[in-house]
Length: 79
Image (cartoon, rainbow, N blue to C red; front, side):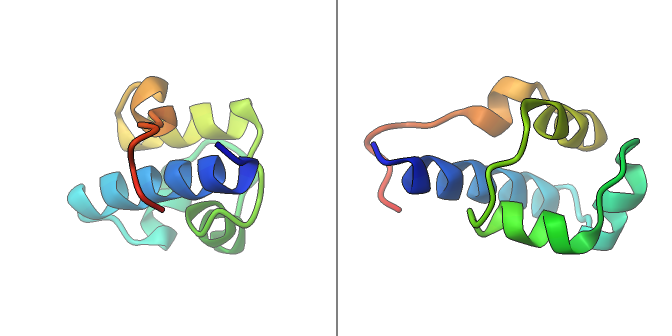
């Protein structure tokens, strides 16, 4: 699987979980205890940037899900 495909899947996971929780991107940024803005969240959700493991951890904490749920990549998924 290509790097770009992994980034898209991780971004889709974040967006899905965020929407399931009823959060906007602004809400999510407000819950993250790190220096990140809505532009970065948007790029991560679209798979346009390779977020650090620390950033993904902070996002998982803000969404109250295990990091593994955000990073879950099913190789049979279509991107």
